[in-house]
Image (cartoon, rainbow, N blue to C red; front, side, top):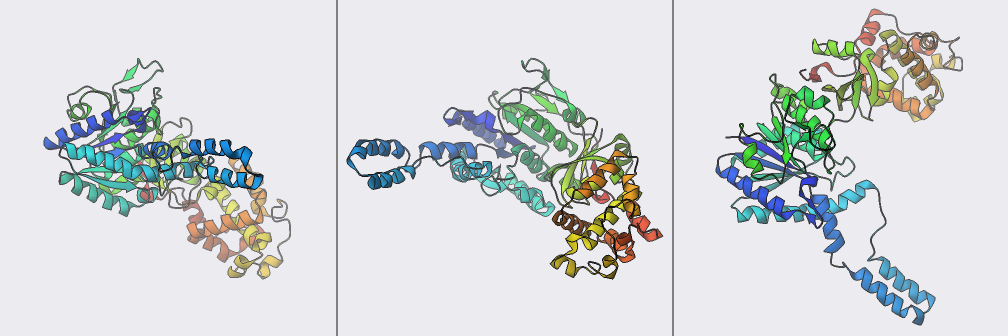
Length: 505
């Protein structure tokens, strides 16, 4: 018995009329055959928004009324006064297409209309071949919660074990801003359901290295799948690069992946046969992630990226944590605790691993690539700007035990003067480019931004901030020198050690 997830992309079921019903019907029939043979199938499908747009454009209760009303208004325009004409024109505008809105709204409404229609279609097709379906919608908040994904995995295993066909889709109706890539949803579903295989169905037969689709890629390791550059990406949201990256992550969690064409005869049955030669296969890694690490490594939604140097990568592979000195670039806007991807700064296509960040992205941009002493200088300056500068004025300052206190009154201005403050002098005179960039960033901060950064640092690293606030030397440009404070500064890291997942090479 094989438990397999099938991801059906928009590009593979698209047609001029909206959806390629022949393709969908054929796949449902193939799934019924596989289930009767004892296999468990889970379907991750796109197409709700596409179908919803079709319904909104052609099948609404007022569809076509706009043209008729336009003719009516034109015929009577000469016979009515201006006020009556404006009332008629206002009536007409009710039936015209709304003006283009933001991408989120453009996805949300069609998805809300298309989801029940798509499920009704699947239910009718499945019933014709003796299969019962169930619907599961997945949002970004689900992917960000290990508990929710654990519950989802149990539900999927229970439903598939009872012979049902679970149909999963990213919930773009209630979560349109994140616009979940169903390739990533498919990986999360496959890992959560403990599937042994994941089949990506698209509009091309495999991944290709060339635009003429002649240099086909047959088999890849997870590392090769992450690094390979491909063309012939299809027309769906994710594209072939997304599928290979997703397949590599799934393979590291023990799920073999196949990329093939939805229109290939008996594609479901052939994908269940280990001896069949089809599509592009990404083999499961020999060293698989432990179950407790699969949420970070395979299921969690990635909120951004950290680019690290070679020394940091080597350190990570020996079991060390990721210190700030090894982070060379930060992409994305995320809070402390978010899951991010770790990439090679020299070869960004190389995905090294994933982990939960210990600091928000704005703080990481300030502290990236700095030595422990330079990190101490940045924190000292930031806290002085927060509690002794303009940012200290207001309710937030009144709540702070050190804000606007007696020591703060005696702090000379300006607060970033390298001649007056040792921490500024050390940071500005640093030999590294990162040190000088951090000093420039601090000098450009507005009082409001200072408050945001300092408060987010306090929430993310309370022990670190407490060492500075209790010492109070930051008010005079002095980084704490006692052993405990220096130990805290040296131990600050970019990613929580216990959350680190480093993929095998």
